[in-house]
Length: 133
Image 1 (cartoon, rainbow, N blue to C red):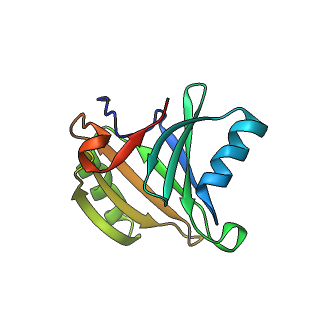
Image 2 (image 1 turned 60 degrees about the vertical axis):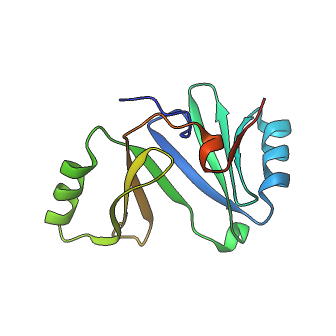
Image 3 (image 1 turned 135 degrees about the vertical axis):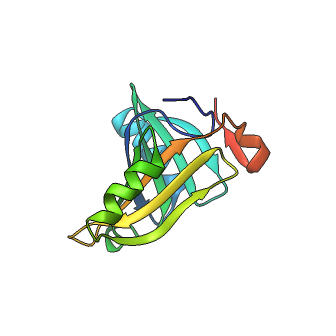
Protein backbone atom coordinates (compact mmCIF):
# COMPACT_ATOMS: atom_id res chain seq x y z
CA UNK A 1 0.00 0.00 0.00
CA UNK A 2 1.20 3.52 -0.76
CA UNK A 3 2.05 6.02 1.95
CA UNK A 4 0.19 9.30 2.38
CA UNK A 5 1.19 11.90 4.99
CA UNK A 6 -2.47 12.93 5.28
CA UNK A 7 -3.62 9.50 6.49
CA UNK A 8 -2.94 7.87 9.86
CA UNK A 9 -1.04 4.58 9.91
CA UNK A 10 -2.85 1.28 10.12
CA UNK A 11 -5.19 -0.85 8.08
CA UNK A 12 -8.28 -0.63 10.29
CA UNK A 13 -8.86 2.78 11.89
CA UNK A 14 -11.85 3.40 14.19
CA UNK A 15 -13.44 6.84 14.06
CA UNK A 16 -14.91 7.58 17.47
CA UNK A 17 -17.15 10.59 18.16
CA UNK A 18 -16.53 13.01 21.03
CA UNK A 19 -18.30 16.24 21.94
CA UNK A 20 -14.91 18.01 22.21
CA UNK A 21 -12.13 16.42 20.14
CA UNK A 22 -9.39 18.59 21.69
CA UNK A 23 -10.35 17.56 25.21
CA UNK A 24 -10.76 13.93 24.09
CA UNK A 25 -7.34 13.87 22.40
CA UNK A 26 -5.70 15.32 25.50
CA UNK A 27 -7.40 12.74 27.71
CA UNK A 28 -6.65 9.79 25.37
CA UNK A 29 -3.01 10.87 25.27
CA UNK A 30 -2.72 11.29 29.01
CA UNK A 31 -4.76 8.25 30.05
CA UNK A 32 -4.05 5.67 27.33
CA UNK A 33 -0.76 6.85 25.88
CA UNK A 34 -1.99 7.88 22.42
CA UNK A 35 0.06 10.46 20.54
CA UNK A 36 -1.61 13.31 18.69
CA UNK A 37 -0.69 13.12 15.01
CA UNK A 38 -2.81 15.48 12.93
CA UNK A 39 -5.48 18.03 13.74
CA UNK A 40 -8.09 18.86 11.11
CA UNK A 41 -9.85 22.05 12.15
CA UNK A 42 -11.83 21.50 15.33
CA UNK A 43 -13.70 18.45 14.01
CA UNK A 44 -11.11 15.66 13.62
CA UNK A 45 -7.93 14.60 15.40
CA UNK A 46 -5.77 11.68 14.31
CA UNK A 47 -4.02 9.84 17.14
CA UNK A 48 -1.50 7.00 16.97
CA UNK A 49 -0.66 4.16 19.29
CA UNK A 50 2.24 1.98 18.22
CA UNK A 51 1.58 0.93 14.61
CA UNK A 52 -2.14 1.70 14.86
CA UNK A 53 -4.36 4.75 14.83
CA UNK A 54 -7.75 6.11 15.71
CA UNK A 55 -9.54 9.31 14.79
CA UNK A 56 -11.48 11.40 17.27
CA UNK A 57 -14.36 12.92 15.31
CA UNK A 58 -16.84 15.62 16.24
CA UNK A 59 -20.05 14.10 17.61
CA UNK A 60 -22.24 13.75 20.66
CA UNK A 61 -20.07 11.17 22.35
CA UNK A 62 -22.10 8.10 23.31
CA UNK A 63 -25.15 9.34 21.36
CA UNK A 64 -23.31 9.14 18.02
CA UNK A 65 -22.38 5.94 16.25
CA UNK A 66 -18.81 4.97 15.49
CA UNK A 67 -17.51 4.23 12.04
CA UNK A 68 -14.54 2.26 10.78
CA UNK A 69 -11.98 3.32 8.18
CA UNK A 70 -10.25 0.45 6.34
CA UNK A 71 -7.31 0.82 3.94
CA UNK A 72 -7.59 -1.39 0.85
CA UNK A 73 -5.28 -1.81 -2.15
CA UNK A 74 -7.97 -1.22 -4.79
CA UNK A 75 -11.15 0.70 -3.93
CA UNK A 76 -12.68 0.01 -7.36
CA UNK A 77 -12.62 -3.77 -7.13
CA UNK A 78 -13.59 -3.72 -3.45
CA UNK A 79 -16.54 -1.44 -4.25
CA UNK A 80 -17.72 -3.80 -7.01
CA UNK A 81 -17.62 -6.73 -4.59
CA UNK A 82 -19.69 -4.79 -2.04
CA UNK A 83 -22.20 -3.54 -4.64
CA UNK A 84 -22.73 -7.12 -5.84
CA UNK A 85 -24.02 -8.05 -2.36
CA UNK A 86 -26.71 -5.37 -2.51
CA UNK A 87 -25.18 -3.40 0.36
CA UNK A 88 -26.45 0.14 0.97
CA UNK A 89 -23.91 2.60 -0.44
CA UNK A 90 -23.74 5.88 1.48
CA UNK A 91 -21.11 7.59 -0.72
CA UNK A 92 -19.74 6.14 -3.98
CA UNK A 93 -15.99 6.09 -4.70
CA UNK A 94 -14.67 9.64 -4.69
CA UNK A 95 -11.17 11.12 -4.99
CA UNK A 96 -10.38 13.54 -2.17
CA UNK A 97 -7.80 16.37 -2.02
CA UNK A 98 -6.07 14.64 0.89
CA UNK A 99 -4.82 11.90 -1.45
CA UNK A 100 -7.39 9.17 -0.85
CA UNK A 101 -10.10 7.53 -2.96
CA UNK A 102 -12.89 6.45 -0.62
CA UNK A 103 -16.41 5.10 -0.49
CA UNK A 104 -18.75 4.55 2.45
CA UNK A 105 -21.20 1.69 2.94
CA UNK A 106 -23.63 0.70 5.67
CA UNK A 107 -23.44 -2.85 7.03
CA UNK A 108 -26.39 -5.03 8.02
CA UNK A 109 -26.26 -3.61 11.57
CA UNK A 110 -26.48 0.00 10.37
CA UNK A 111 -22.77 0.69 11.00
CA UNK A 112 -20.81 2.77 8.52
CA UNK A 113 -17.59 1.57 6.94
CA UNK A 114 -15.33 3.75 4.79
CA UNK A 115 -12.91 1.94 2.50
CA UNK A 116 -9.91 4.01 1.42
CA UNK A 117 -7.16 3.66 -1.18
CA UNK A 118 -4.14 5.95 -1.15
CA UNK A 119 -3.77 7.65 -4.52
CA UNK A 120 -1.20 10.34 -3.63
CA UNK A 121 1.12 11.41 -0.84
CA UNK A 122 -0.33 14.78 0.15
CA UNK A 123 1.09 17.28 2.61
CA UNK A 124 -1.75 17.86 5.13
CA UNK A 125 -0.99 21.61 5.15
CA UNK A 126 -2.15 21.78 1.51
CA UNK A 127 -5.76 21.07 2.56
CA UNK A 128 -5.84 22.61 6.03
CA UNK A 129 -4.50 19.83 8.26
CA UNK A 130 -1.93 20.56 10.96
CA UNK A 131 0.69 17.90 11.74
CA UNK A 132 1.39 17.85 15.46
CA UNK A 133 4.80 17.29 17.08
